[in-house]
Amino acid sequence: MAYEILDHEADAGVRGIGGTLDEAFAEAARGMFSLMADLAQVQERGEVTIDIRADTLEGLLVAWLGELLRERDVRGMLFSRFEVRIGQDEGGWWLEGRAWGELIAPRHRLGVEVKAATYAGLRVERRGEAYIAQCVVDL
Amino acid sequence: MELKKIDDFVWEIPKAGEMRVPGWIFVSERLLRPLLSGKGEGEGEGGGREWNALVQVRNVACLPGIVTASIAMPDVHPGYGFPIGGVGAFDPDEGVVAMGGVGFDINCGVRVLATPLARSDIEGRKEEVADALFAHVPAGLGSEGKIRLTLEGVDEVLEKGAVFALHRGYGLPEDLEYIEENGRMEGADPAAVSKRAKEREFRQIGTLGSGNHYLEVQYVEEIADGEAAQAYGLEEDQILIAIHCGSRGLGHQIGQDSLPELERASRKYGIPIRERELVCAPIRSPEGEKYLAAVFAGINCAFANRQVIAHLVREALAPLFSLPPGKIRTLYDVGHNNVKFERHGVDGEEVRLLVHRKGSTRAFGPGRRENPERYRTVGHPIFVGGTMGTASYILRGTEVGMEKAFGSGVHGAGRAMSRAKAKKRWRGEELVRDLAKQGIVVRAHSYAGAAEEAPGAYKDVDLVVEAAVGAGLNALVAKVRPLVCIKG
Image (cartoon, rainbow over all chains, first blue to last red; front, top):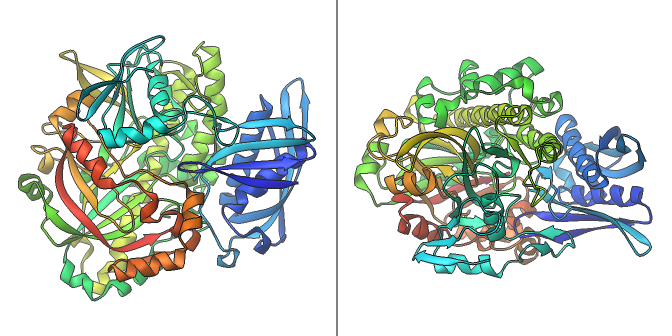
């Protein structure tokens, strides 16, 4: 399990890599929050749960990352650990996620605020033994 | 894709294939070069699909109801759906509203305040001014505004824009005349904005944000157009304050909410999706109407934010210079991520159009009744942001710009280097020290963020201005330079 930050002319791409789709989505979230803070400094003092649906698996990734940004703003928190469960039913794709973190503080060595997750560079797929989940985020 | 040189500052993508209109790119040869070297439509570095700015100009030209041309301003670079610097005007009956033509930071824009101070008043006190502004204007990731809102309060923001802030005691009544749309966008419907979006504004109103947003104390280095400068009340060495920010999380959430909704609408109405960020809906459809009502509300949110921040700047400076708030006036406030109904001449006839400007400001020329009375004979000012270390420019709207580009203008330098590369190349602390040696005092909430915004990571703003003025779209009024810069 790992994340990568992809080069982009004006913004940045985040790529989560995992043995399962669930892990790849969790790692993509870590990648996105790594742009905003030093994750090692963000302790697990609080938890949020996220429940979302989307028409497509790719749309689900954008919705998941977007929802975490919303939680950041509404709660004033940064997150450093994530757990995700993804599934599909007749209504499309669903995701149940949990994120752990704490209130934003200068000691987190803050970076730039991510504004939104976008459909640009969006890709969710199996690559060999691993799954990747990636998109460009607007900074 | 064919590219035809029309003159030194205009290139055309002739109408071909599914294009409904040609593409017009207002760039010099030097500005065109990086556009050609970018990737075409296809696999990007990250493995996902990427588009270059010229392909995006062409894609916009294919949208239903587009009028005259798909336009790219001199600071054009790749964006999401529309290029940054993209302008597209649509017939209100046949046309579409596209999310890519607005982006996530709805009504991101610049407010410039004109002070009665001269450079000599500030020079010896830059550190003090920087500290006061840094302490008083909330900025950076996680910063909270001084106002707390409830859902009802946010609805009022969305309905009334800058007028909301004024009612709460932020700013001066005379500010409104010098804000695009007088600070209050008509047609905004808070009911079109999700509760999820509104919650993001509870603590964020009156915050600057981060990234390329800034608060800058500048001095007028050079005046190029005496008549316009007089109308604007500008003099050499005068101190100005520039505020660059947008609609914060609420605006971003409108975008995030709208992406899947407009994707479904594109399919429903049979509009081919050429890029997933170029989703849209007919203007005359429930989906299109809802998105527009939400965007108009987002525009108001940004007007309110800048109105609050302008007040905070006045509060911070008042005790330092014994300045009553009324002595710091709003020169102008204009957005560069907007979509609005406007009247324009097309083939000799005045028509109502829906004009998208993504990374382009409105730049209405002389005579337009939307301009404040004081600016009516010269057109309204627009602000072209440089970087922390370089000049910014004040330009104005022109008749040529009205004819050729629906009264639009350039908005900034545009990035030349990715944030990741900039962060590797510069260290925030060193950069701040180097700028201090050049006489520019920087206060940053994030050193990493400051490194990403290094002047060397941006294109040369002088070239952008040269092309805008060379093409006749905008006219040069004044060049300004930074003295103090606050970064989020």
